[in-house]
Amino acid sequence: MATMTAAQKRAQAKAEYDAFLAACPSRKLLDRISDKWVTLILAALGGDGSNQPGADCAGEPRSMRYSELSRLLAGVSQKMLTQTLRSLERDGLITRTATPTVPVTVSYELTELGLSLHQMMRGLKTWAEMHMDDVLANRATYDSRTA
Image (cartoon, rainbow, N blue to C red; front, side):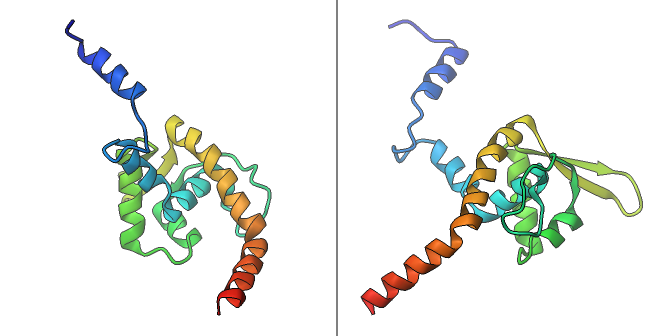
């Protein structure tokens, strides 16, 4: 059997990623990106930060400060926002920039990788907002049948 270079091993592993297999590392990534806070942070940084459900999501990606994100994402705790931002930075989906002011100004923005994911997440967020009435009606019907 011929030996493989590190690059060949990485290429082979990439070709073999299968999220249906328990040991596949893509499962951890799917777990992370399926989190509601990840979806909302990507939407906010992608320019979808409207407070109007179903509003046009044609905003431009932009940099946002921690405090802006915290105000926009109603209900997120400081701990959860910090953990989520760190994990997104670790995965290369966002960049964190600290400007030496008093106090220090920290801002976040999407990377190219983050922008590519944002496009899909935008559709998911929009779908949820547009179909919430249908889902609530179906839940009520189901609950009345099973009660």
